[in-house]
Length: 224
Image 1 (cartoon, helix red, strand yellow):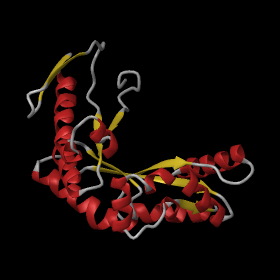
Image 2: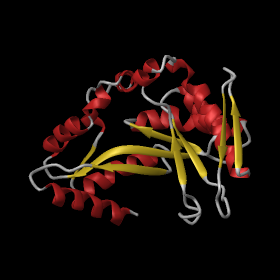
Image 3: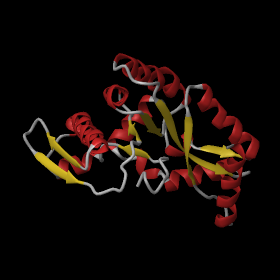
Image 4: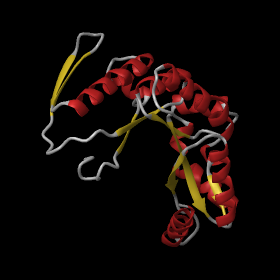
């Protein structure tokens, strides 16, 4: 993949939902260790066509790759908890967040990830902030639509606890909405909080879905 992308690949990884852990008979408390194990395999695969993994439960896996000229790539980790931010800083190139406020980015995500990276002797981490974005003149309508599109995040236990801890009632409350200048100003506050990049999840609102999506896309393109 990175060969095809010309060396621009950024691999984002993260734990699956708690329900899936329970379905597989495992505990979500093990998610940090699983991410560390996975990252060790990814790191090994960058150096060789063969990668092997042995975890603490004595399970093992072998991976064989066949690329013309393997190239190193960046890895960022989905990190909502202090433990995951520490793990990301220690063994990855940064973090990616979702449904996280400016205050959380500034007060927790950035300092905790940066400290972990410094302790591990790694370069300054990337702080990628994932956000729902919709350029729309009717803010109430855009927020209501976000609650429909992203409502599942208000029900998943991990995200529900995370939203509650931030004082966020519904997923739409964290969405970036408004006209072009308002969206640009809101996104800037995340960079001021320490984000190095924003990963926009564009959604449409109103009767003209295609036009709404195109308007948001064009707004973000101009901000590049």
